[in-house]
Image 1 (cartoon, rainbow, N blue to C red):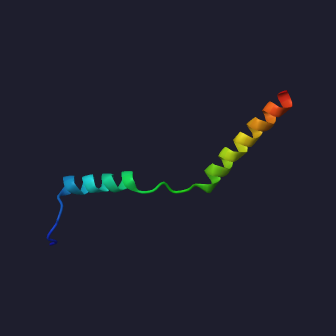
Image 2: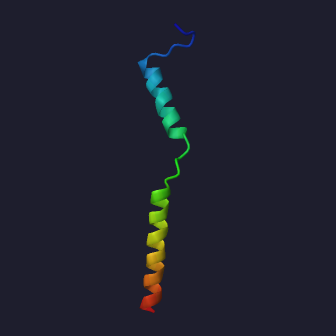
Image 3: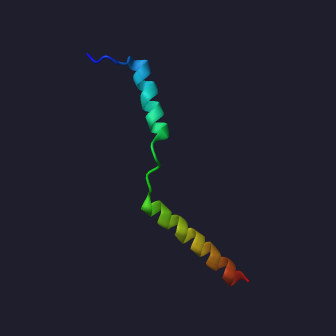
Length: 49
């Protein structure tokens, strides 16, 4: 048994802390979809004028 063994409440608190503070993973598909929609909106505005 470890010196700093946590009970279930402590383990859940540590897990929640690490989930909140981990860096956001870059999603390439989502980024490309966002760029595509912005481009299409821009094109649409240009054709409307």
